[in-house]
Length: 380
Image 1 (cartoon, rainbow, N blue to C red):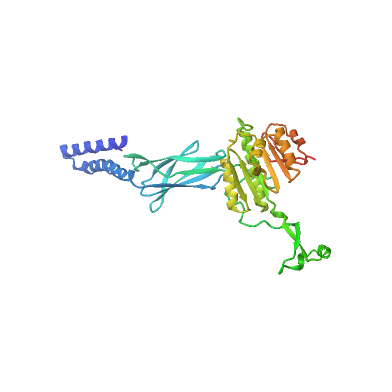
Image 2: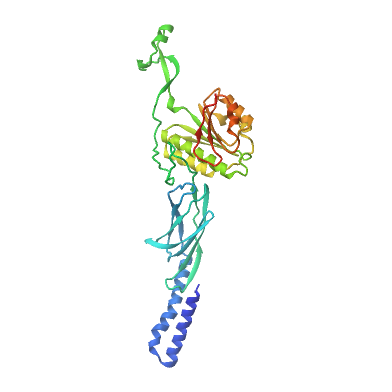
């Protein structure tokens, strides 16, 4: 508990007391008492705080930083702490900051952190090094309180301008419905009592002799499915390609959110995750958190996975982000394009020309070095 300085002070106090007592030097008594009582009192205070109930909580600014972008963390220690130096490990980064009192029973240590890679990084090894202002005593204790910082993949804003602000999850995304931009004819059915006559199809009614109405479908609410191909074989040894794939996915998810479009994000890994996107900030958080934690851990090629689970391609429109250009996948999506609109975002080193065999598939290419998806002409 006592530091070297504390032991020296305590020894000096005892020596001063002996001199004062042996030689009658009463002037040395106050100094002897101070040097003796000071270290012992400091050790007693730290011993009491060493067993006090302390709780650690950590807040990040922004709450969800983007990959490679610096951010801040504030560690709050609730309880009777005397101050000291707080050490925390954020992923592979170890940082220390002074613990400063900012309220009754509340102490805060503030950390400035460099950019971390995409992922979920545990914050661990919370160690508080306590001491007194004079350095007489020292005590370490481990603080409990699990936490983690979720680092999102980077994205590009619609219009091609890279976002220069770390993601805070707000991003102007409010819980809202998609704004109607048009309607498609869904079918014609018989008029029901109480319905407005504005949808009556008079030609069909005259032909059938019954009052018929047009049933319309909101075209803006088409169920778009964004499928992320987390093929562990195709992405083995290619961590950069995986990051570029997820950055392209984040850009597309961002675009869906800004436009207020309804869609479903499908992460086809070892297990399949489906996240509905409804234009609200809650769905944005859920989708980006899933992309932050995504791993290329599926063993089957995507074409084989689809044969086992056809629901992977469910949706009125389909966007597939994949590092693969295998003939089986090209042929599969070419057949799918005969039923629904299909767009492929190809990320990786394989030649994108292989997709020329996929009739009717619109192609976007992300270079192996990363960047914004570049649209090419739709394959006719």
